Image (cartoon, rainbow, N blue to C red; front, side, top):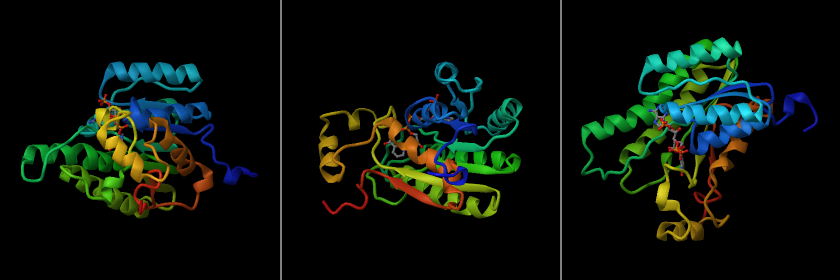
Length: 255
Ligand SMILES: NC(=O)c1ccc[n+]([C@@H]2O[C@H](COP(=O)([O-])OP(=O)(O)OC[C@H]3O[C@@H](n4cnc5c(N)ncnc54)[C@H](OP(=O)(O)O)[C@@H]3O)[C@@H](O)[C@H]2O)c1
């Protein structure tokens, strides 16, 4: 890219990544830091936050340790205050918090339903609102899933929440315009703690997925980061309300 306005880089930007201590969020946090961004990566676990913060510091990023639970509004407000305190302003917010849920529609309890929605959807709403109120420019990226469009067995709350994240992303893009862009990334199958043994090399499910995916494999946890860099960068300055699928072609495949 030849000029500053179209550069695919997050150098010198300040980013907050919720759910940034493992998996996809950690991959984004490290990639942003390697590209010259200052990054706070957070989650509920103090130990996990300490570990990623040390990693980011060793890469050269300005950062600090702060835990956050997206189920708790006060905790997100505290995160925003800490971020504004050390960065002055936040340029990029990434919502990547997630936890496992598996239950069929017929067996799911109200409590399981509410817990899933609270983390995967309401948590994204809270963070978009709290940071949206204090950011006067920049970009928010929500990590959705191809399950926001596709049928997945035993995942009613996950599919519903991720469809909701796609809708919330579009609505927030309008409400936070023109200064803040809001987009989502819908990953396909990515090897992380959340996907666990299911996507391990040689598992029966893996064989089916690999066969059906044009790129013939699942993603490593850091392969979503490039898309996040693009969406957060000035190269995406006219992109908002978009949900970008990053799935090796799985969703579109007729294989
Ligand atoms: N892996 C895939 O195949 C895949 C595919 C499509 C979409 N996604 C989406 O990508 C996102 C990240 O998933 P992942 O696979 O990277 O999972 P992961 O490795 O398990 O990471 C999840 C992250 O979220 C944090 N977290 C969980 N509950 C939280 C809460 N209440 N408040 C704040 N942070 C919380 C976790 O840390 P703590 O436990 O310390 O809080 C961790 O940092 C999720 O939204 C998931 O739905 C994943």
